[in-house]
Every structure is written in structure tokens, then in C-alpha cells.
Image 1 (tube, rainbow, N blue to C red):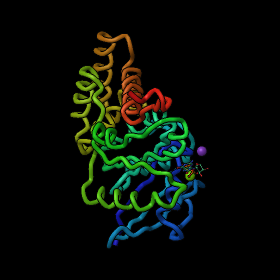
Image 2: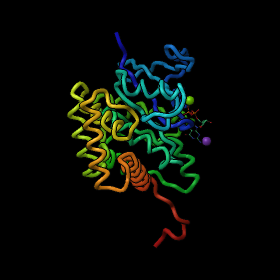
Image 3: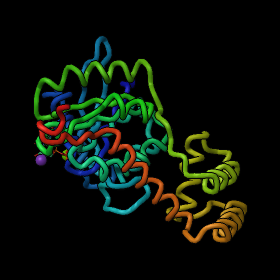
Length: 267
Ligand code: GDP
Ligand code: MG
Ligand code: K
């Protein structure tokens, strides 16, 4: 029978493979993705009575395109495969930068947890990590880890078990009235997709990352774009990107608290 799948996703160098090793131990299989020379690293782990398949994806910066074959493999897997849970790993010491991808991953409409890795490095930089506050803001579990330390394994396994039992999709970004109306209008022209996928495809269309599949969608996209051009100086793609970066900054502000010198914090 098919095992439930957990996909490890994040920017390069956030600790995906370290976390993968921590979770799967010796139960690993290294091969290639079909048709390409990109390495495919998968393994199994046991959560309670469940056996789970874990896939360590190549690092990506965006779901919207760019990068080489390895990035395309990761994107296709995240968008098109049956995945029970996305585990998005971010570097807590570079949080704002890593959260731009997180904003896009939320839009896949898939259950997700956020792993705030490298908490040791963040703390060494004088940053205190507030995972509960970030979890409340995002609507998904947030787990602080130091993937190099074995003690992170137990709390991570507990959180993954919880997340598989009670999947949470998280709060998608609100791009403001203009863009949201455009996304809804475009979405209705994509009846083949499930609702969450429709929104994602509509975003890709507005950002100009994919071409409309048929003349009707092409016409609608042109009309919506020219309406938007009349109401805003920025292109839809810029409006969307600006919002994602503002959101990433907002989340980083919630999640990280800069500790002042000890003396200054006391009354
Ligand atoms: P990947 O590119 O996402 O697969 O990242 P890796 O797992 O290869 O990790 C990148 C580097 O960060 C390696 O040198 C790891 O040993 C290190 N690393 C991973 N997790 C942590 C952590 O929690 N704290 C610290 N300080 N280093 C870590
Ligand atoms: Mg790796
Ligand atoms: K490092």
C-alpha cells in the first residue's frame, strides 16, 4: 500500500538534509528523479503505528519558476504529487529572506508545518524565537529546531504526528482588494482545477509565469491586466511580490525578538 508522504521543502542550505537524516536515520534510498540526473533522496520513518515516506527535495527559492532542473523537480513534486504534509524548513537566523518561499507554499493549499531551524544561530545573533506567536499568525504548527542536535527529533516527531492527524492549511496571504478580485475572476475560468489550485494558477497567470491555456482565459487576463493598469502604477506582478515581501517581514517581526543588553531589559 502507498505510504503517506512528507515532503521537506525550503531554500538551499536551511538544513533539509540534516533534518532528513535526523528523521529517517539509516532508512534511506538515494536514486534519481525520473528522466533527469537530479538526485532523489527519500526514506521512511515510523510515527506511532504509521510508516511514513519522507522526501528530501532540492532547495528552491520560488515556486513560480527560475532555477535549474533540480528546482523544477522540486516545484513539480510540491504542486502535482500526492503529499500528506509539506514540512517547510526555514533558517531562523535568516528568517525574512526564507519566508518569501513560505508565502508561496501556503498558496499550494496543502497541509503544512513550519520548521524554524538553526535556532542556535538565531540565538547566537541575539534573537529570541517566538514560535507560538508565529504559529498563531500563520495558522499552522511552528516547530523550533536545531537539526544538528538529536534532541530536536522527539519534539519534531510529536509535531509531525499531530500535523498528520489534524492537517492545517494555514492562512493564505491577502493581496488587497484589486488583486484578490482579479484572482477570483481568473479562478472562475479555471473550472478543471480544485479551488486552491485555481488560486495558485491565477497567481501564476497574473505574475506572468505561465501563459493562458485557452483564448477565453487569455482575453480575461488581458482585460484584468488593463483594468489594474488603470488603478495602480505598479504591475500586478509587482503588487504581488511587494505583498509577499511585506508579509515575510511582518512574520519575521512576529517570530523574532531582539534581546537587548541584559542591563537594559531590567526595570
Ligand atoms: P540543505 O541544503 O537544506 O539540505 O541544508 P543541509 O542539511 O545540508 O545543512 C546546511 C548546513 O547547515 C550544514 O553545514 C549543516 O550542518 C548546518 N545545519 C543544519 N541544521 C543546523 C542547525 O540547526 N544549526 C546549525 N548551527 N547548523 C545547522
Ligand atoms: Mg540538501
Ligand atoms: K551554518
